[in-house]
Length: 77
Image (cartoon, rainbow, N blue to C red; front, side, top):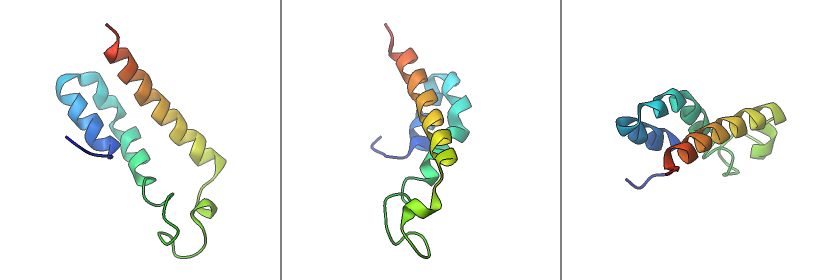
């Protein structure tokens, strides 16, 4: 599977490793920010950075780090 969607990746991993299922909501939240944070015409007016806060960034960073930690745990020999 070729994708940039974290939701798709977590869903696919969940098929063989059930522990990934608990990250489904995290993945959905991360995917919601994929386009809007990159394209200047995504929001009705102003630059994308006006629509994001430090709190939102911290939450997404924590979600991404949690998923990455699970991936690293899975890949350990």
